[in-house]
Structures are given as C-alpha cells and as structure tokens.
Image (cartoon, rainbow, N blue to C red; front, side):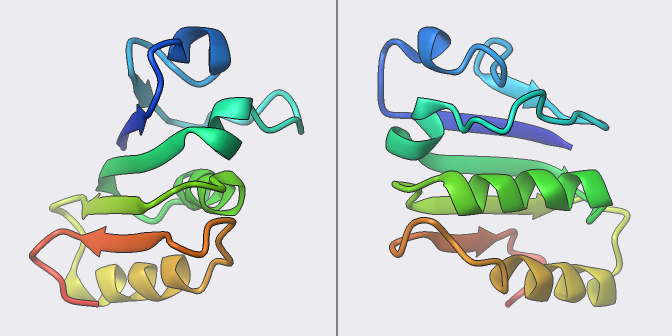
Length: 116
C-alpha cells in the first residue's frame, strides 16, 4: 500500500517528520512510535490518497488513525489493490465508512471499480 498525504502548508517536513518520506509514505507493518498525534494531522491534513489498499490489519489501523485524528481532513481517496475481489472491496468499504471521523466534513472516495 502506498499513501500520499497532501497537507496545506509549506513546512510539512518540520511538522510531520515521523510520517513523511519525500511526501509519500510506504506503509508496511509500521507502528506509530508515539501516542502523540502530529500537529499536521490535527490542523493541516486535508487530503489523503491511499493506493493499493488490501484491507490488512496494519492498513486498517493506519486509515483509522488518520480518520480519527485528521481534524480538518476533507477527503480520503482509496484505490483498492487489483487483486481484491468485489466482495472484499465492499466489506472494506463498510469497515472504513463505519470508523468515527475527527472531521465532520470528511468524505470518502473510492476507485471507480467499486461503488459504495
């Protein structure tokens, strides 16, 4: 799974050094080292693009973390891995959309191969 974060600021490296590697996160079995939420998640993260989502436990944990802590998040765009069948995609959509969000304006967008 690959994740791109778009944060409305020009000083992102100083705000989120633990999560960013050149603007893109490669997330495999990564666990947050701290329970403190980075300031950028709370005040600047407004769009996240997740590509290759397969519904693994660590992917779901990261998506939940972002949804709960992204207080100004407007959009989470999720593209599923091409190997996932429609039943698993629909199950993942249900799980993701049931997660409580820190932002009341947050909307999900999924790839065009599935319709929520």
